[in-house]
Length: 179
Image 1: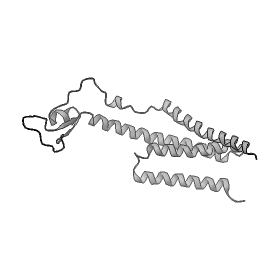
Image 2: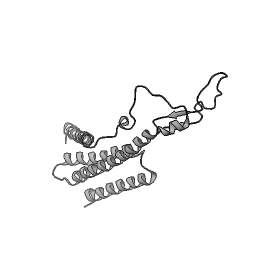
Image 3: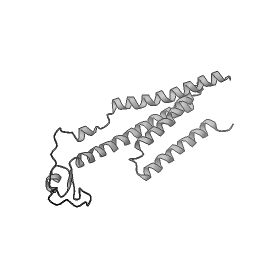
Image 4: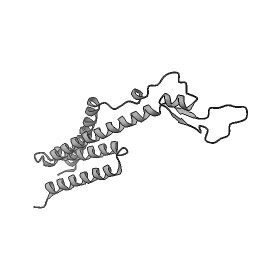
């Protein structure tokens, strides 16, 4: 096989890998909308922060007693005894929705990646398309894991890695076993 032919084959394989993953992610973003921070914590043009703990908590905020990090208040100057983060409750709700969304996207991308990997592995009629689909499936696993990794606990991370490794071993055994 000449060099030009190998470059052409790898160009098509890399194109399949990139475009298929772009397709997965953009199609998913059209069908399944990501939570928007503004939907949970709408911003207003004028914000009046509560000056007391009770008023802050009543409005869904989080009161921090030492807003000035232990620095003494200069004589003659008055400051509130703390600080209110009015977006505490809504940002917690947004974080939960975001984690749920990332988990669901992870599952969908893993399923799509596994389908691409399996089809590519057992597609014997065209080596370029089979290789492109297989590599696209692996890249889909990587993208899915990167999106969800920070939200997953340690046990889920180990399970993700074990399943991915088992799947790769199984495919390697089925596809490349010695004659």
